[in-house]
Length: 164
Image (tube, rainbow, N blue to C red; front, side):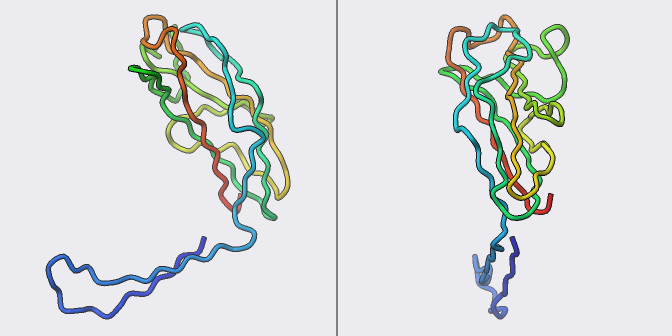
């Protein structure tokens, strides 16, 4: 995305007057484009403390632009009525430092497994028209955490950045 802007002449300052800005956005025809094979995945019924549980179906990511793109992904906290599990990065498990009401997500693909957090993580790059398939994996919150018996929901966001 190319951003250009022009500012108006500097007026005599008045309270709460921040001047004017005209912004123009241009998007090249080969701009970042991403298609996903599904909008919903399911981990099924998972016991607290379960590790490396695969979701179904897999997610196929397609670069629908004409240029190479970097593919990124991030996750969110998992929520249910009256409870939240905090998404944590790293490699913690219930056997060490994961703790209560924390969980982990990862995406496994041909290039390996990438742990997710609330910040974008690189899944690699895709040439124009190429696809990559990822399996979402979860390390559930430890026994004793809130949310037992509830449907926890979370979100994984994929992002394409032109020029991968």
